[in-house]
Image (cartoon, rainbow, N blue to C red; front, side, top):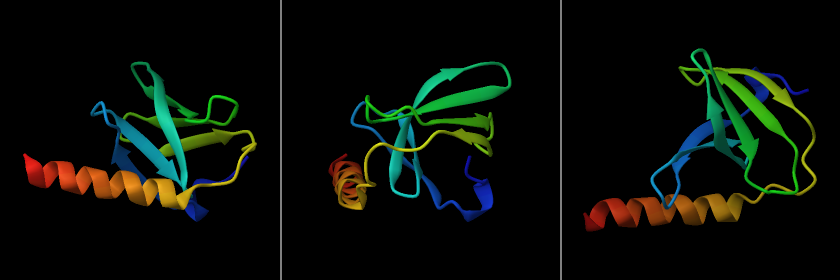
Length: 89
């Protein structure tokens, strides 16, 4: 299990307008939300890493190890697309 203080955390928006969690260049999509907690799952369907946050997106738990390397280039591409899309509107 990793600890939250050493993690680089940000959010990006998916093509469908959903908020996705970016932790150390790994992307997590929202899996479910309860009255107190949000559950995120690694975007790679083969990967079993999960993240639990409170409703204010403060990380409380990260479980598992990634079975794939991080892809910072893909994140940069997504952020660029976000910026271009925002300018076009």
